[in-house]
Image (cartoon, rainbow, N blue to C red; front, side, top):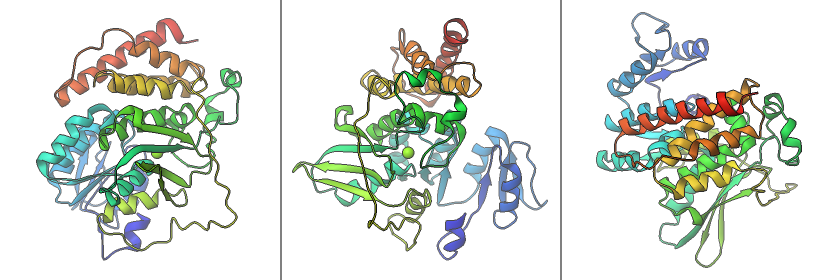
Length: 360
Ligand code: MG
């Protein structure tokens, strides 16, 4: 909203939706849109068009005339709104990583068919998008995603057995929702981002690397064939990738990300895969068939929720995801209906394992 208020000649809002923050939405809606979608269907003034619930959201995206839809929904529920945006001829500014994790090939080919763009809003993918876009004629060898290391970066593997969700919610650099903060502490968030980068940039898994960078100023890097590294560097402020997605291919002036390098220390560490098993599990999911990323994501959502309810320990998150990935997941997916079906089967399996083998 800050970006739109500061650039009124560039942007306006025609529709808004919210899940939990209904009151805030209604405040914002008073300023702009003619369409709102809330869980309850409440609208601030009678002449506004109001929609409610998940089906209402898809309908609003399809019916409202807009150039671009920003999808910042958390979790698997973000998939169908993304599909609705592309199907109704809108560009998609994507902060919902599950859209690509669950249905990357289907979503990117839908965008190609409709002639629409997918503009990543996740800070790492935004960085990679702009770097690869600007360097398209250079031979790109590797993508490097940076990770803050989350709330438990300085703890040992042994310490992780005793941490709670309250400890995880104290994230060092980014202020985010509860689930993504847990994902950040377990590196499941980075695992999802590796899968996302694999699809968005058509890069094989072994050419996507993760490096811990506690200051979160370098958002990602690309390595070219001559072994040079090119980085996107700005303050850790989500307004930078959001504005860049909205203004693409133009770059508009702003101060949000301006970083004074003097006095900064930027450091890097290798990821300890024993401490962060959710990261190697994501690579396992990419190397399997296109069903496994859906299972990885669904099981992780169940695990993160159980951890947030104090029902399991932190190390159980990866145990539950690993156990859910095992066994019969051999069918390839070729439609969004199949994606949702696998998602639901994976949730059932993960919940069963949680109840019978893991829950304390
Ligand atoms: Mg990110």
